[in-house]
Image (cartoon, rainbow over all chains, first blue to last red; front, side):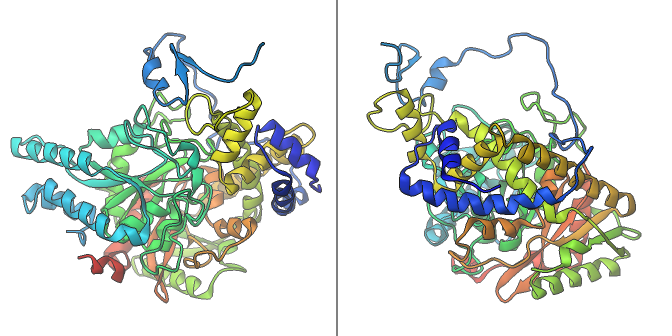
Length: 95
Length: 486
């Protein structure tokens, strides 16, 4: 499955990663090499094999729907780039 | 003092040969003198360490010292440490002071150990040489022109150079075992779910696991006993009792059945590495073990499957770095999208971007089944290979890496770097434990013997590794670099 620059552009957009034109062509080369290596998987017959998501085949543990955490907003906002009155500041989204 | 193993240091503190304050100051001084050449630490927390050492000494005087009270350690900079910069080797988190402790850190604190600081690593644990760090590459103390391996290269180099008796690492595709092999130390990757991932900055959540890196299997046994166990804050933590790993070390090995996977002794394996590993296997035979060849037929597909699954999980995990809540934020964003895209472009290094893009691409519409579903199916086949092998043998043995440490700058393209992990990566896909122990040298560069066991066989792996270390002294060799700062 050949990789084209449009694929890199789409992935960069979905991943919210700014990629310049120069960088895009470099990524096409690198990612093509990686995907060529990955494409070896296609030669293996996996018909009827269940996908494995968790190495112990464990399922998600559930807990009672109870409040267990205390509010630590001030602590957690101390490492934020910009906050005001307990809110995270970002550029205006709605005019 | 630095010549001693952690186990010997525990005894020396107990007998009053020296205090924890003296010991801590000794290592801090070695870091100050030697680390300019190695670059194994990102942060050194000297003041805090000396304070903790005093507390440990006071406990000792009062007669209520905890088992590892006053033992200095280092933490890979991937473990969130309350009030201390936790960078994960990235510009993205260069300004991140963790607001809480990882469970591993909490457990080590509760056992009385002292953190000297945070060790260097490949950015977000993505790499096999520690050359991908925002803070510059780490050097191998056995040969300063060689890499220490990665991604836990700072932890491995610091232990090998005697800057700290032991350190914590994480292993997603070999990141404890390969640097342990390259630096001539002992490193254990536990079973997936054995050690809590809470507070460990996530790379690939279905593969990540933390473990000890130290001078001996006995040292690792002491540390694993502290950090292992169930944690409700990690949804994949396994509720299962923690055995006494130290108590099990001395079981005799007569009758142990060792399997040598034939795929681990094929093309691409350095003949000198192979020789060292086969010599090590002979030592086991002299201890009463039997050896047979086994096959892990899907070995060849492990790296391709990993480079779908790990980047896919990474692309999701790393979406949290948005320039809003923590981490790097670009200057003067024009709008919200500009804030996201530029903060991420400035904060992440090349390898991290590659993996985010690969992961995003393989998970995207039109590609998901061909890549992600396929890789997960192959993952099951790879795990089944191991389960089948463990029907016939107790442990598997082979090289930890196809070559000894390579030169800094030698692996220029990403795929040639990825192929280094051929013997370690399948272990993470299968979730089984593995340990690397020193087993000789090629020139001045160490060779690691990798020993693998079935799920939750850590006690057996430590026993098997310890018995080797009772019969050989490879693990006691120290680089000349360490002696320069005596």
